[in-house]
Length: 108
Length: 158
Image 1 (tube, each protein chain N blue to C red):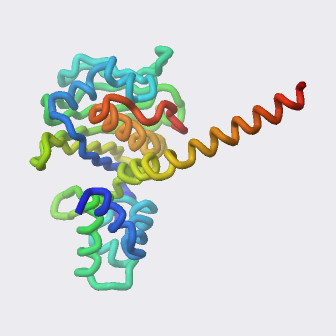
Image 2 (spheres, each protein chain N blue to C red; image 1 turned 90 degrees about the horizontal axis):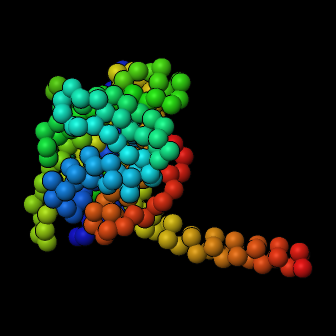
C-alpha cells in the first residue's frame, strides 16, 4: 500500500478521526486517557493508534514509563496542498478575472 | 493527568527524500531557510552555547535564543524565545528539538525529520502560534528538497 493509501485509509474510520479530534483538544495523552473517550476495548484502541502511527498522523514519545501520543498535522497539510489548494486555486483565479473584467466594463 | 496540564508540546514528523547531511544544511543555512521559510532566515554558528536567531526578510528579529546541542547531522536543540510579540516573549524560553534519522527504504535515501517544540507551561501561546507555522514550513522544505521548488509562497497566519 502506498503512503497516500495508508493516509486516506487511516482517515476513513470514524473512531480514528475521533482519536485525532481528542488529541487535537489535548495533545500528549497515554493509552488509558485516550480509551476514556472511546467505547471500545484497549486492544481496539491500540490497533487504531497503530494505523494512525503507520500513516504518520500520530507520533509517540516516551516520558519515563509512559508512552504519550501526539497529533502530527504535517500529512494533513500535505493533503491540503495536494487535494484542496490545487483544485481551489484555478477557481479563485477565474473569479478574480471575472471580477476584474466586470469592474473594467463599469469604468469604460 | 494529561501531559497538556503541565506542558505545551507539539510534535511534527515528516519523511523527506534526501540525505541527513543535505537536510542539516537546509535547516542551518540562511540562504536555504529563506527559500522555504517564507523569507525568514536563521543565523548561528551552530555550536552548543552559541547564540541563535531567526529574522524576518526585512531584518527584524522574530525569535532568538541559543544552541543547546548540535550533533550534525543527527540532533539539534535550540532554546527558543519569541522576540517580536510582547505576550509571547513574556512566556520565556521554549525548547525545539530537531531529530534526523535515516530510514532504509526501497528507491533511495529517506530521512525522518521529527521536530518537538515544547514549553514547561500549559496552554503556551508561543507553542500555539508556531503550531500553525511548522506544518507549512515543513511541507515547503520537503517540496524544495525533493523537487527543487516550494509549493507555498505566503506564510498564512503566524
